[in-house]
Length: 502
Image (cartoon, rainbow, N blue to C red; front, top):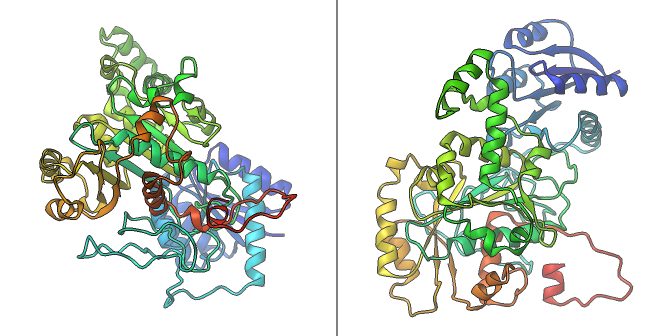
């Protein structure tokens, strides 16, 4: 009989995990909820065949400390993590510790996957990656001292969009011959510009739609090494608090009656805050003429289930994209607090693999919180002196906003078709930012958005769609993964488009 060690805070999940183990004939030899419990178990003569940890402990022991203790005691090969937030993904990936998100599977499914993974390991010797270029968690981005260096294409001899320049810290570009980008980490991209009218919203819509539609046919799980099939999920968040312009650009949003917005999240968050308050705090709140929840916000206590998150978003059946529209009126901004933005983004990031955030041409707390939550920031500039001048003012004050400049990349967009005043490469040099994409003018974009449809998904042969596709592949290389092929009654043509788009 296998022996299971559970290292976790005592809660409903551990109870379900314990019950699932009992039903599968696995003995739970210990449940350690504190570091003291864990050290006491390790000092005993009992040895576990399997260790499952979560990111919550009663004494606040963090993931890296707990994992280090277990690895030092010889539990690396049979150590698995269940996490509720993507903030731990980078550490677990870099340490090659296998993990799943707690929303991915039930405890019983988790145990079944682990048993299958451990069975496969006994049949296949583990490869030594210590001195190999095939390390699955290696980072292909090279921005050290040369922000404009062009990397070698990670997918050789395949008809896929080529990369222009290195993009952000996406450690998931597949090596040649790999069937799927197993090293991919969930990423959040914030799109911003201090200048209006440069195409931020159009870029956010097009980029997220292209990734979402391509991801509909992909079967792999980028969050885990357990090989459980999972669809990549993409969410587009509108934090441009200016009359909800994104919702008016997407037909599937505007045609849904009473679609949820950021204000619905505010209401849901305040309900959860109220439930965590003590009777004395509730009484003080009732006596407050402003009914201000600020003194009672405990961000770590506000948890959303996957079902609650889905209900607070709008889903497009055609592309598979989820969207969170912004506040409908600028006056509603007064009901939103920076803490609410952080709670909302944390919940969305815990469920989605790719999150794209559109922001306004300002440095309001909406924009600042979105930029701080991002793994990458795409700054959009038109090739004009006015746009570049304003962009320069922003980049010179990055440190004052407490942002990491290494996460910032440049996209030059031609939004109106006029002759360019400046060369994109010269713009990148002047702003000292890596140029990752140049988007050509296409008059079809405006017409497509007026009809409420994303342009690039439906017009793949256009130059603009081609550039969006290249940028999308830098975010997540779905074009390197085989898609599910339906049964064909007639032989398919082996042309470029049939292979490229499946």
